Length: 413
Image 1: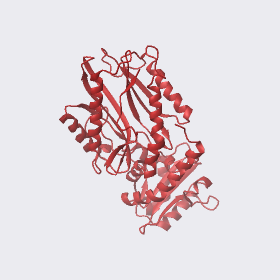
Image 2: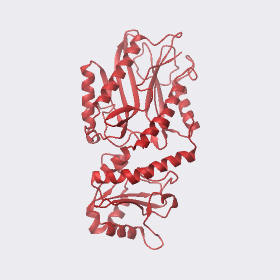
Image 3: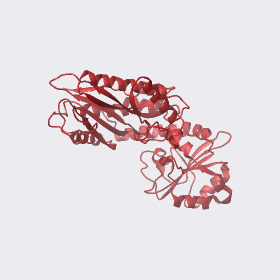
Image 4: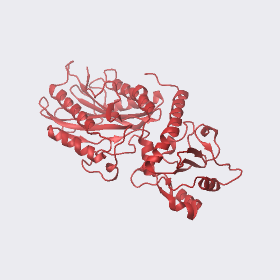
């Protein structure tokens, strides 16, 4: 698949950002009850949400920045910049600060007097790190500027920040399907093929470096370093690393990249053929079981349910069918481990406090991440099948972004 030019990538990102600010932001502010959202930044210590709010060519804040989003009771919405004047912001923000005539604090107080907001959202959060970007220094400066009149009106913007980060507009979901996810699938397909794997010679680390190299060639990079591991008949370790890949091995990868501002997270498994044979029936049956668990989890997604409720429903469904399963799915979008409800944790298969109690919303994306263990007669041992797909929850249902649909077992001959 051909990667778009940098200019075209940036054009698309900025176009999507404009629509998100103009159409999505006011809806989310009304939903979360915030009249004015203030996002403050210092150069080299930008708020995690900053990069999702500015055009792609705006790489960092110049000295000290302030973006403001205002929703009036009559529905009037404005996106304003109280940062130093930057023409790259002006297609998206109204410039509301003139450093030649006023201080930044004076510009903010003038804005507050015009808008008179009842609630002022600021990025402080004990639960979501992406919504906790306001530094102590800037918090103190802001409180001094707001004074006795406006400081008491500040509240955590965690709900608004989360909804902004997790919500995908239709165009973003479409780009996920047509451009973003196919790149991730292509790299995994290349790595888990005879093009890259020579049994008895190629190591799992070789495949990790191959994927890293491909992402660099695409100009995308990986948001986490790819992991490749193997399982082998007679070995108890389910995730052997740094091994030479041998015929009969079952190999697994976990990888993610970033394209057009959105991230992917995927896992694939492949059987290394012995003399051109197919994978043993027991492994193929285990894979079918994991596909079945994928469907159980997908059916457990319902708008309004919490991450914990989805987890409990899915695990109960697996147990009812005799499936030994683990579930640890997470939101994905601007960030890989994104804002929104956590649905189980790998190291905690139970009730998750805090973000586990967050509710599922429509038009969001998730890494559908899970595993099952099943006895394989040909190996006389249990095998762990680990799968992960980036999916969209839209229209009240979970949709695979990969046009192939549910994950397939790959066979390298």
